[in-house]
Length: 160
Image (cartoon, rainbow, N blue to C red; front, side, top):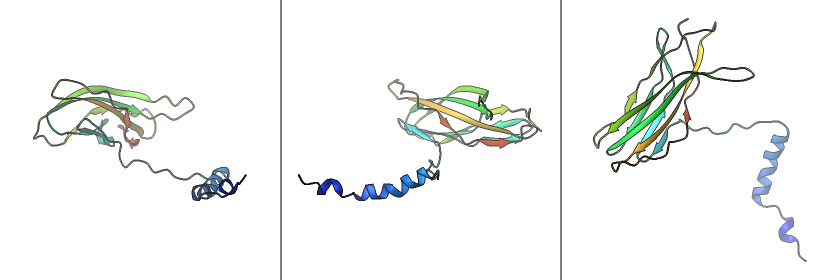
């Protein structure tokens, strides 16, 4: 019985040795994250932008929407205050369902969602948004809802 093929490590196996060794030592390697949280489905793209502190207690939870062709897009949007702590239960600040219609000549648009974020802490509030959408084609059929996409968490003044 010849065992020459099973005794020789492949290049992939040799490459894994340093990675496994680092893992055993507790060294964490940074993972590549997507450049943005935008999602595309059926010719439409929705991108939750970073929340923006605008004035007083208001924060603008903006999203960009772009669809090619005649389409209707229905968007679910939720604004949260990020809570740290043992239970990590984030506070839902506001939610909405919005419908946008596009024809062949429409450009991308930015939708604004102003939410009153009163500061109950001594420091600024940390906020983010979740966005999900579905698309209706010209035949009237709706796609499935996309998975929820999360914006970055941003610290805002919140009306100190």
